[in-house]
Length: 306
Figure 1 (spheres, rainbow, N blue to C red):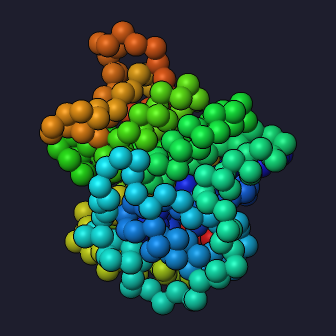
Figure 2: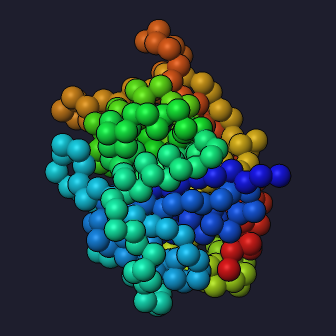
């Protein structure tokens, strides 16, 4: 069976590190390129973190640095959650800078998609700035993109604004470009991530599995220590889970718009589950998750990492 070829756009960040490990050691995916975007922390830190992770896993995947700021808005980040560098708290090896391409993320994505024989799936784990730029500068790539799978948005309340989720709210103009692109789009929103929980007894197992499990638990203890008792939320891993095991999700085709003008609601995802707006569906949204299946899958996926 041929592998699904993917490009991952990410902003590591702790959640991203876990999702990347699962994707990179999956027997089903072939990661052709990893690109970075400013989000959880600055572009310099997220790029350095990606290179640290690749060195940690001893993997030689091409990497490219992307947008350092949103399309039109001021830079904001989540360093209050992830720390200033995004992944402090674990002794990583020195990053292998030779993996970093000289070209920008957008150019690297374009070249990778253009040269690839088959259609490529793009997996977005951070703000959508790079992907929006790719679609605006090189619209011809749409013909060779199979699907965009992203972690982002919320069915109800947000984790950044009252109604906005972080990845979308950081660059809502970029998100609008992606959601209006006409490409097949699948979304794992905040709500399913909040149910994708890893409990203390799971963390104890994960820590003993391999060096990835140990790294993961140490990072979460540093920045998510208060969640160990109630369960750690695996937001970004849900996008990878959807890609690898979609049966664990309840999915609804619907219309989603991005609010860009609201004084209090900018970045909100308007998920029209009841078709009140009478618009054509533009994406598939995960509206629920089988929590038991996720836990089983997640533990198995971590066990396959290095």
